[in-house]
Length: 340
Image (cartoon, rainbow, N blue to C red; front, top):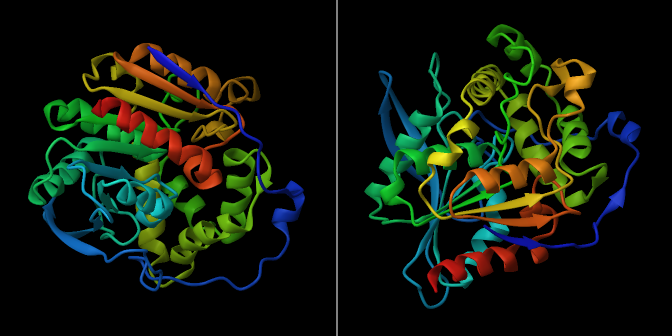
């Protein structure tokens, strides 16, 4: 196992946590498929027929800006991050000669919000693989962030011969929360909680868990993106799908299968991240042990064969958003290292 260790000064202004609860100004309102929110590149729709429903899977397929290197990167978003959140990453990769595919998963953002759908990581991986095949992409680099990291790991387990390299950016699911004692939450309770979601609640959570109390104005765009769907006329189906996919994340761990990943893997870990879905439901003595990413990242790198660990000790859950000038050079470095 190779390990890179990076330090960087945290950027941004420190805001008191209490200030997050203050009244917010007016924020944008978006439709259930994120209508009204602009993506940085044209969005195409892939037809999906699954569980008796006809749906659309939205994606951006972005060509290299300069000389193509013949490689494609598939970017898988997190639960609270749409495909557009990869905007700077897409720019960096396409300028380096990569083709980039950035889909929104079924149930998320510009893709369909199905009623009564049974969400699973194998299902989402199958839909993504079908899109990759339809576009004629062979052995892409699969990069997954947050929930997208869980999905990317499942994708690599299901389609190992069709993945050139796996990159996990602060993936959730590096531990099994239920096995560690976090109580289960029913879908009804989860749905009721989702209906209370607002700009302020999202920002408070991300500031505390993702960014170690530090907030930059740039982050507001992504909070508005997510909160805008809860404020629109599709809020009920958005909340329902979010509750269902939270259940998927909690009940479908992949960490126990890390030893079976047969794809060259890079873990890129922001050490200040403390994400632990459902951790607030656990007893205090359990909750305090969860989401310890410095330890979790190293344990995952030991468990996954042929794994490389890149650590950003002073960054949080989204290093590609928080410090792109630090994150992206290292991403290109690990991609180029595999090519050589």
